[in-house]
Image (cartoon, rainbow, N blue to C red; front, side, top):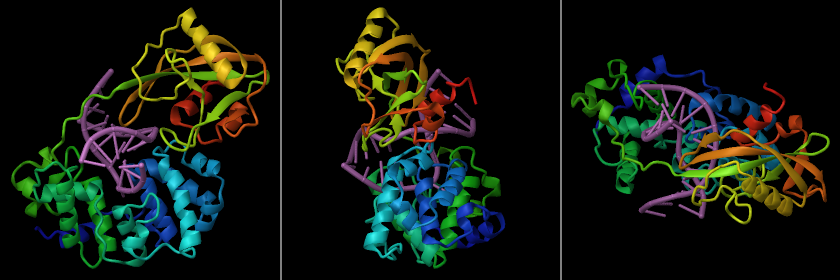
Length: 369
DNA sequence: TAGTCGTGGTG
DNA sequence: TCACCAAGACT
């Protein structure tokens, strides 16, 4: 084991990112929210969301009591929407189960939905000064390089070893140390092109000594992403309002408002589910099939007027190719008033919690902006 | 245990 | 265009 706390803290004092919004506070709510938003998310992406979210929902009580649609709207565009749903559940648990206070032990903290070991440790260390080790992507990379660990970082045995290492290395000032190791990972010990000449740990880093900084952590080859295809329905009524459908709570884009989707070859309208990719051709038969399927399911008299160009959206584990089917609503029972189908004027739709591709589509409706 | 869950930046 | 990656957690 290589002691790194001392040079790390000294470096952090001089070069750390002390101006990050969540470093101006020791309020557990604010620290916890930052940790949730930063899960698998880079600092620059989370920043504006963090500020906006706190402005709207500044404490446990406000978040616990807010409508889910409001929470998701604030999260819209940030991704991993289960985090937003879990965050609200966690806030409700804090209010009802912990008397409005973030739990002060690791065991209790990780019972909150969306709070794992690393997130809990980060909050306890920063909010209460507890000596708790974190193990996020930054800390993991620093430990793997400094100790020249060759094993697959994702393997369970490696994880266990890294946690042991992290715990042993974390000093009494875990609050400072945790932030220091994260900043080092983000600024110096970066995934690619690590800046070893500027690193305070270079003299004791095993990977550096072996000239393998760039080769660690080892990467396991991932198979290419599968493709999924779908048609999105852009149905406008007489007043120019657009039909949106709320997605189920679980699964992709859970709880968000989306354009109704369909695939041409499945008899009924499937929703971004895992099925063999069918081409997004524009043929009379496919238009007919889409029009009938949507009309039936949504109980609307639809007339498809055009198919937009193919667009793409890449997820972590698959790639989505889709086209927008523009349609007019001639009449019929308006599938409205339901909990999952609503008509929105485009300007109002943009205030809802939308997946990024849907937001982009609706933004482009009015010709830009 | 191995998938599942978003989005934007980067080489 | 593409694969990889990010302040991970859940099922």
